Length: 444
Image (cartoon, rainbow, N blue to C red; front, side, top):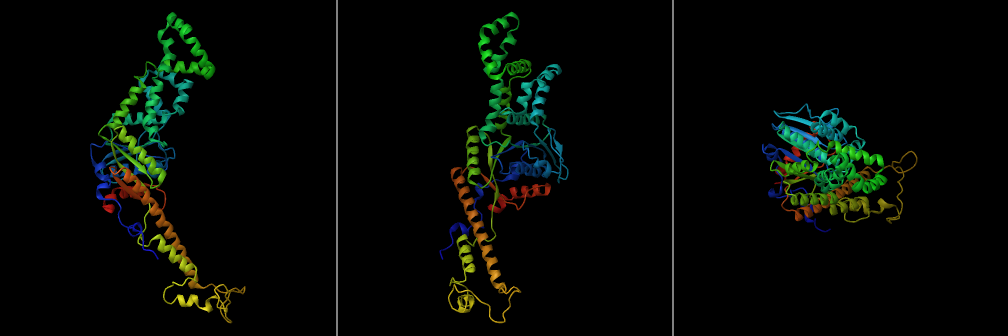
């Protein structure tokens, strides 16, 4: 039998050096940390991580609000709240002197609030009733990301909370989260939109002359492509809000600078899987390119084993020995029994069927009784195979994570062990927070 691979011998021991481990508590305790942004690909546990960080910070004395954009509403359920909406709601059952509030972004309501905050009542009513605005606010590409940043800006401007934890939209790429606000701002402040409002700005005969001479061909073409009513709705919408907003691009730029500010900390969340860590690597590189303050990587759902010294190879060999009694390398007392002619039949050949001796116990239907020792061996072999699968999984996770660290050795990492079930209450979130903070203790 070949010796254990090195990774199998070390599977139960720490893999990260102390310098590589992210220390979460100092980050949460630092009063200069005002915003923590959890980003990453979908399905890696961003919402749970954001909620656990918020709860831990609150129970360490800070006044925290967690903003989630997750439509699954898991955050509300885990915090014992019937539902979340666009208004921060106090979470009951926390420990310590701090406070925890939670809210879930209502994209359309946030857009409505922006309109209501920057327009008089009559103009706001005209915008809110405009069909183009209703479509835009309900699902235009980039609107969710833009409104998430709008809400973040509103929360930060109120200066009511010590810490804001943001669970970013479930975007497939960092480009969506970082670029969508600018894309939407560029669209609403772009040349086409302003060209559509030019006639209204000119007014009177000049406006009509401009429309007849310079715009008739373009509006006729757009009318055929978009439909005359939609074009009219767009023109009415932009004309109504043109004097209302100070420029969407300007607002997007201001929020973008807020994300780059020293008081903001980005945490990339990933699972120890190839696709998730590839996406995490892309996030890390993009955040660095945009001068966003990345503090580290949360590696979720990391598997472990209390029997790490038993390699997958040895476990499979042992399972094979137990499952096939003809293999000769059995332990003392087993080999002679299992390789004796009596074990396999009177012919002495391994393939000869076994027949019970006269007077031996048998089932009522005449079949031989189950050998308890053989049943135990079969169960043991099955457990050994399961252990081998677990060790192979650990090896894959180790290789995947090592590739990430080799590519980004500057990124601090905290590993969160996989849990047997989903998190559905404050106790579960508290456990996740403890595991996040225990990374340095366990791995250093």
